[in-house]
Length: 80
Image (cartoon, rainbow, N blue to C red; front, side):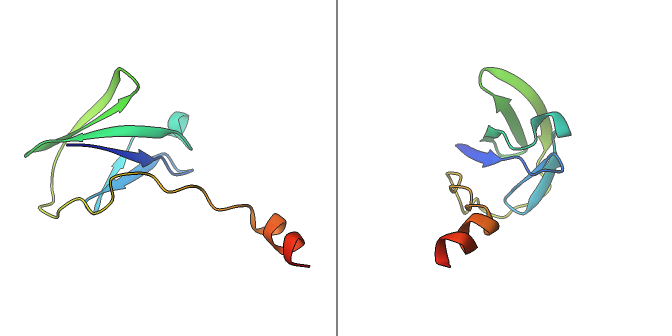
C-alpha cells in the first residue's frame, strides 16, 4: 500500500501512529510511504530515503495529504 505524508517542520512524519524522522532537509515536502507487513519505506519521487521497521499494528487511517491551512494572519485579515 502506498500513501502520502507531509513532513513536519521538525523533519518527521507520522503513519499508523508511528513517528518516523527523515531529516530537516525534507521539511514541508510531500513524501510517499510504502507500507509492508513489517516495514515502512519512505520515497522522495523515485529515490528511497529510508526503510524503518514497523513497530505498530494500527491500520493506516489517511491515504492522502490534506491541503495546508492558510496562514492565520491572512485568515484574520480576510474576516475583518
